[in-house]
Every structure is written in C-alpha cells, then in structure tokens.
Length: 313
Image (cartoon, rainbow, N blue to C red; front, side, top):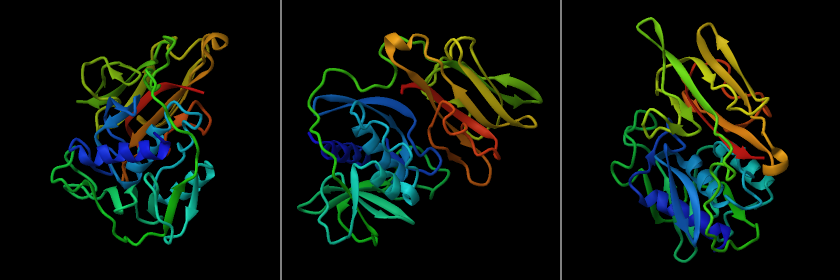
C-alpha cells in the first residue's frame, strides 16, 4: 500500500469506529491500541479528536516506521497545517480545480479540514462536532455524526494538500515503534495534586502506563491542577534531568531531558512529552522533544495532565 492509502484507511477507520468522537479537550485520543493495515502494525490512541488533530494523527501514524516519521509533528491546527505539511516536502498546495486523491486534505485554513477517501465517487472523511459542542463531551461518537464518512461538499475549502511523497509500504512483521526495542527503561514519574489542604501523590507512571491500574496514558486528573512532579532517580538516564516552572504552588511548565545510557549500542533516544493546561482555553500543547523548544506548557496556566515516553532521535 502507498502511504496516502494507509493514511486514508486510518482516518476512515477512526471515523467509522464509535469509540472515536469529537472534542477540543482530549483532542489526541486516550488509550493506545495497535492496528494492522496492509500487513504492518501501527500504534494509535483511541478516543476523541477534532478535525485537524484527527487528520494530522492519521498521517503521522501512517508515517510510523518510515524515514519521514515525525515530519509532521509541528502541525497543531488548521492554522499551521499548510506550512508544516508543505514544509515536510511530502505535500504540495493545490487549488480546488485539482481532483483530490485518497489521503489528500481539503483545507479551510481558518476553520476546518477533511480527508479525501475516494476520487470516484468523491467521498471524504471528517470529524465535525461533539455531542455537547467542543467541550464537555462524552468520549466516543454518541450520535454517529461526530466523525463520519460521506459524500463530498464544499465547506468552502481554500485548497488541497496533495501528497507527493514516494514509497510503497510493504508488509512487515515488526510492530510500529512506540517504545524502544532495546529494553531501555521507560521513565518513571508521578504528579501531585492538592486535596483537603494536603499534597496527594498520584500513582506512578512508567512512560504511558499507569502503575495504578487505569487505562490512562497520562499522569494527572483531568481538571485538577498539578502542584508537583517528580521522576524516579536514574529513570531519565545517567545524566538526564527535568525542571519545573512554578507559579506559587502551581505547575505551569515542564522541561525533560533524557540521556541515553549506551548510544553506541542503541542509538540515541529522547524524551517525547506534552502537557495539558487549564485556564480560559484548556488544551493539549504540542509534543516536545527533550529541551529543543524550551519545554512544555504555556507558562501561564496550571497543568493538569502530563504524557511522556521515550522516542528515537
């Protein structure tokens, strides 16, 4: 299968699976799952998305295990999708006179995006709106229309992000990379919240796994502000470190650096993490890699969730 066909298949499955719904809060799913497409295995989070995060995710998942993995990580919303996708050199920007192909994206840069599923007839897939608007939704598709596959319509769209990359992706018995394959220890960390005037530490996370037994892939409790975070000694590698950005007793930012123990044997790994903040506009921030971009958080609003794992450089 070609990469564009894989991306289209992933987005179609997301739209047709009622475990996926629309939300501006969760936005990048919740629970990891492995899908097999064309003989290859891909890792994806099941849960709620919005129009842009769903299409970005479908393409990012399709690129797992290829030389272009991570090429679209800078894309966050419809506002910067065009610049990131075209900048990756995997896509070009074309006018609406072009006949879109599977995996291409119909884009309204200010408002919305949908994915082309088939050229004849012209069918698209999209995440539209939640059961309770953009916030406060129940996870999953409650009415069958939060995410759907249907005939083409003109939003209106500004243009088309057309896939111009090369490479058929053949079958592989190996799972797509989610955790390192060489048994490097996944960072172990936990966060604390205030309860009844006292600090309460939540269960330890080992990467994306909650040692407390829940299916959550993040440390924290949605809507409850974090007041502290700590990492188990040595779990960030021999010279790894983290820094907390505090505003009084509120955690408003976090920077994590992972130091690979034996890079000559395994290659280099880095901390890959993102945070969710509260405030007037609660949202997940983009993924950060070590201290490359100054850490995670908007340095203003208190954090309530942290998600972290190791990724290959």
